[in-house]
Image (cartoon, rainbow, N blue to C red; front, side, top):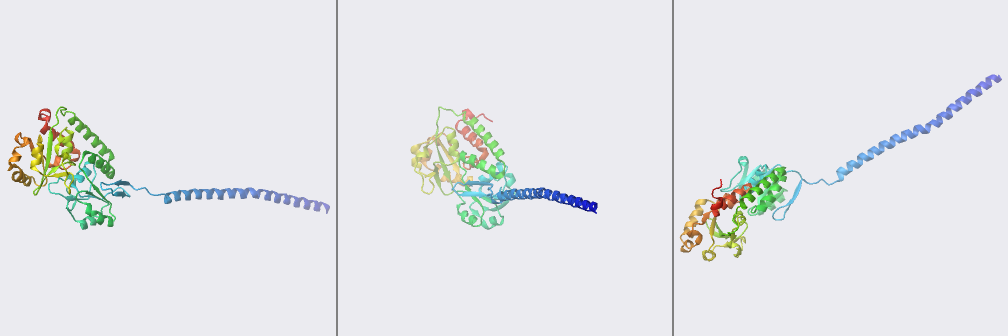
Length: 347
């Protein structure tokens, strides 16, 4: 009997040891489970932080810029449906490999070959806003001279609208770079501007330094004549060629400060070496105006420039409208006219 009791006690003792061992191992299992949960929670926290950063962060717009009447324009993404209301600006956009879905037409204005098939939204001064809006543009580009009145309509329709001036070489450089950004062709714009700079520098480097011919520039329309004081590509090109604009000191008109009222007596008094004429509109109409209002006047015939045949009608596409990346052609044209001995034999 005693033997049986001892066996029973030994068996009970073994069971207790097993139980103790089992209890001792439990905390290890629990720690492992806790670590697994903590790792999972940490992973979730990281995921939430990342998600919060994306959702909470401000999405940056594609492009912000200020136009030429100080309107701030914000484009949330790269524009794909651009409408251009100025022939000069349309030409510049296509020069940097951009494109438009519609344009405004202009008498005598040239249209890039690739833009001839796009929609028309009326004339440059008679834009059909209903048609324009129906095309759902994501950017409209207009001229400061003709399209300011469209701002309220386009703003009310939440259509980004930018107004630009394209008169000077600096205007050309600034707009070409901006249009390159709009089209995603910044490298193309930079390359074209670098080439143009070199071409113009090569031409102006040949200008005689001992001469500074004087000139005056007249604007001719079917109904009026005015003197251009500043802000045309023609004047800028003439000044690149070391010419002096004698009209720069004249008092500007109230409605158009960049021009001065026409006075034949004042022009005779200034008696410039050259008289340059810019015809606005049809050339035939301008030539008729010259005959009736200028050539018929004895005072006109007394001008040194007229007597010595240094009166010239300049090509509008080169020296009235900004020719964009053809500006070197404008410089070359006027250089040959004023300095034939230096530039006359150039190809």
